[in-house]
Amino acid sequence: MFRRNLFRLVIFATLTVSSQALPANSIPSDIELKYAKLKAENPFPAKEPYIHIENANDKPLATRRFLDTLKSSSDLIGAGNDKDNKPRDVKDPSCSSDAECWTNTAIFNTDLNDFIENHRNKGLNSPPLIYESDGCSVPPEVAKLFKIDKDFPYGYEFLNSCYRHDFGYRNYKAQDRFTPGNRERIDKQFEEDLLAQCKSQFPKANILHPDQFFKKKWCDTVAKVYYKFVRLCGGGECKVDEVVNLFKQIVH
Picture 1 (cartoon, rainbow, N blue to C red):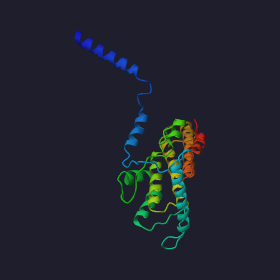
Picture 2 (picture 1 turned 180 degrees about the horizontal axis):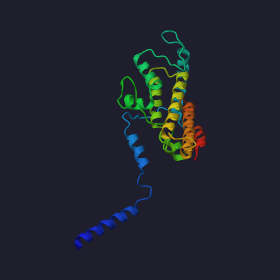
Picture 3 (picture 1 turned 90 degrees about the vertical axis):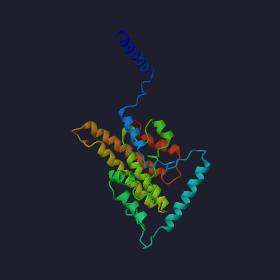
Picture 4 (picture 1 turned 120 degrees about the vertical axis):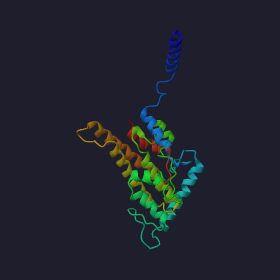
């Protein structure tokens, strides 16, 4: 009996000392564990972001962005007509192959949850479709400065919207359809997806539930900044300082 009590006392003392030795924030919260799980479940991780942000001394990247800009301009001039001589409409991008039509359907005619569960998670039509993604492409230095998780800023779940936006950019580039007009259409879909995610996270956002109402309002504000970010940087020629100034709009 004495030995058993002594053993319990030693265990209790060890656990107490160990817990006191740990910093208060060393134990992840439930929400942090949820975010980590969602990120870990990414079946198609990307090696690099699909939106590149220039630093002041990043000359090789600046050169690459300049060449990409020239290519986009060339594509815009040469992409006025498809095989049927129909203009490429920003509201209804044309497609001339199965891969292009599958891409359009996945982006513009599929519910976001359906895209994640039945397209991306299953790798539907891949290859040729590209599902690789690094999540939301907010620069690490910007996320660190504003103390946000780039995929879940202030707790708002934007990761799935970023997965689909990434899908749009990567496939349109691979299919040689990444014109300014088509990029605008993909970006607008991104904004719609973000706002839809805000709505789904706060389904009771009305005057009878003021807490959810104001949280959704702020979620919408952050969503619009994410949209402005891709409009600013998605075409290249974007610098970290510009992103910092943009994100100052959502400092809590």
